[in-house]
Image 1 (cartoon, rainbow, N blue to C red):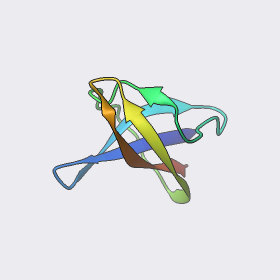
Image 2: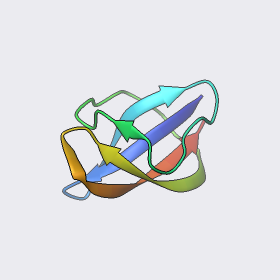
Image 3: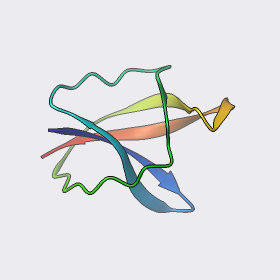
Image 4: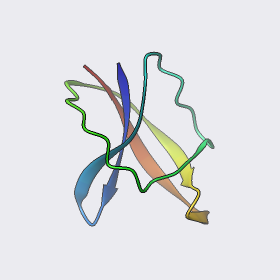
Length: 65
């Protein structure tokens, strides 16, 4: 499983998960969920847009278990 993790006020939060590494730059996600996850290995960083703040792209981290 792959996990998309953002930092909110310095606290990491898992906002999406998928069986495949489908995460790429310029994708948009709802960044409010707090999905339970157990990431083990860092895969990459991507620049995404949170649908709540579409004018402010952020760097998110992709991990896998």
